[in-house]
Every structure is written in C-alpha cells, then in structure tokens.
Image (cartoon, rainbow, N blue to C red; front, side, top):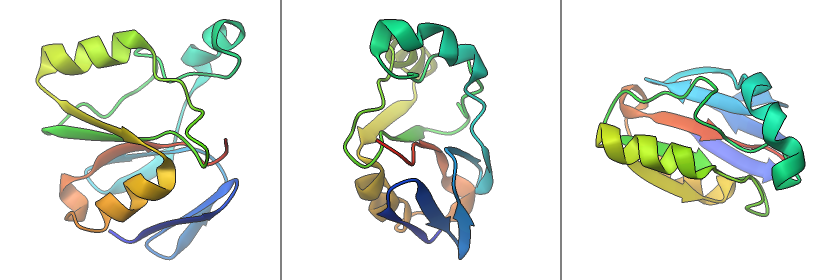
Length: 117
C-alpha cells in the first residue's frame, strides 16, 4: 500500500486523495466515523480515538496515525481492548505510520489515520 502524508489535512493512499481521517481494514479505505468519540472532546481538548467507534480489530496489528504533530489522543480503553484481543498497537505520527504501511501488503493492513493535528 502506498500512503503519503505530506500536507496538513490531506493524505494520499494508492494515488487517491482524502481530506478526512481514514480507517483502513484489510486494505479497504473508508472515512473514519468518529461520532461516538465526540462525547469525549471536552475531556481531551480534541476528539480522541475511543473504543466506542468502529475500530478494525481483525489481524495481529493495528496502526494508529496520530496526526501531523501527534496530537490525536488514544483513550486508555483502546489500549486495554487491544491487549485483551491480542492485537499489537503501533501508535505514531501519521507520516511515520504511512512509511510503515508501505512495507506491508494491503490485505494485512488495519489502520486509523488522523490527517490534521
């Protein structure tokens, strides 16, 4: 999978531009549905990644891109659920995660990528 994150608020995956957070499950790219996490915005100063929104848990690893500056909060419940499911979380700035994804086969990729802060 070719993923590039060079511009704030925009990510390119396999030649297609996205101007919103994305969720990748088995190589299929969709818009991140963060409505369930918005209830925690005031507590975190930003809409965090919560375990209440759709998370692509299938597979052994889940890649989480925390934005250009690494500001996306990942709630403790996400880490706890990953541990219970035996899923390795790889959490880093979105640009770094994009570089890691290029080394993986598309069908093996499960990720959530934040495209702003």
